[in-house]
Image (cartoon, rainbow, N blue to C red; front, side, top):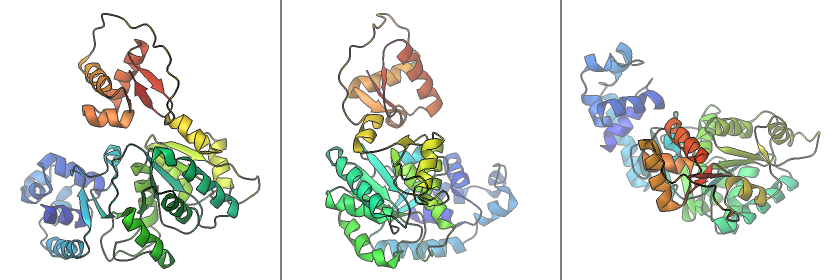
Amino acid sequence: MLLYQIALCLIPGIGDILGKKLVEMCGSAEAVFREPKRILQKVKGIGDILSAAVGNREVFLLAEQEMAFIERFSIRPLFFQDPDYPSRLTHCIDSPMMLFFKGNAGMNVPRVIGIVGTRSATSYGKTICREVVGGLTSHNPLVVSGLAYGIDSCAHRAALENHLPTIAVLGHGLDRIYPYANTALAEKLLSCGGLITEFFSGTNPDRENFPKRNRIIAGLCDAIVVVEAARQGGALITADIANSYNRDVFAIPGRIGDPWSEGANYLIRVNKAHLCQSAENIEYIMGWKIPEKKPNPQRRIFLEMTPDEELVVGFLGETGKAGIDEIMIRTALPASRVSAALLNLEFEGIVRSLPGKIYEM
C-alpha cells in the first residue's frame, strides 16, 4: 500500500488536489494504478498525458528508494487517509497527500499554536516570543514553526524551555537540516516534538519550497502568531494562508517605522490579525480560558431538528464544548452544513458560541 501511495505522489503533474481526487474516486492509491486508462481519461484534469504517466513503472523504482530511506531512518509516512494524518489539515483543500514525520509528538492534540516571524529578529521580538510561549504553558499546546533563524528558532527554544512539544515544518527532505546551524536544535526537537515535511529525500531547500511549507504550518494550527515581520515575506504569506483556512491570526504590534514591525502592524491595520500583547489575548480569543458560566437562553421544549442538527447536538451533548473543526471531524459533515446547523441551533438557544469558533451546549 505504501509503495503505491509514494508512487502516486511522484507522478509529475499530479498535485495534491488532483491526487486526492483520484484516490477518493478509485478507493485507494493502489486502485488508481489498476484503473483502466480509458476510465482515468474521463476524470477532469487527468487527460492523456497524466493517464499514461500513471502506468509509468519508473515511479515505482523511485518509490522503492524512498521506502528504503524511510525504513533506514525510522521516518513515519502519513498518507492523507491514515488515521494519524493531522486532522486539521484534512479540511485544507491543498493539503499534502503525503507527509514524512520523524519524532514523538502527536499532531491531533487539543491545542496547536503556530509562531512565525522574521529571520532578523530583534531582542524585543525574541523577548515577546518567549513571553507568549511561556504564558501558554498551562494549556500545553503543541508549538509549530519553521526552524528558520530568528523568531522560528526562538519559538522552538521557548517551547523546549517550557517543556512543551514543538514541531518544525521543513522546506526540504529529511536527509538534511536547513539552516545547518540549527542542526543541534533539530536534534532536540526529535526528543520533544519532531520534524515534518512533504518533500522527498534529496529535495534541496529551494526558495519555491517555502511558501508550500508555510501552508502546512498554517493548516496544522488552530491559530498563527506573527511576532515580527517585514511587509513582504514568509510570515505574511503564512498569515494570509491561515486566514484562507479560517484560522485565527494574531500579530504583535511594533514601533512605527521599524522595518521588522511593518508586516505585523499591517496585518492589524487591515483587520487580518487580532492585536496581541500577551498570551492572555490568545487565551481569550481562542476560548482557552474557561469563561464564567452564564445562564443559557430559554430553550424551546419541543424543537424539530434536522438530521444535521441532531448530529451536532448529539456530539456537543457528549463533549459539552468543541471547536468547529472537531465538530466537522466527529460528525463527518462538510463545513457549510455544520455552519448552517450551528447557526440555527444558536438562534434556538440550544448552543452558545464562544470566542475562537468554539461552541457549547
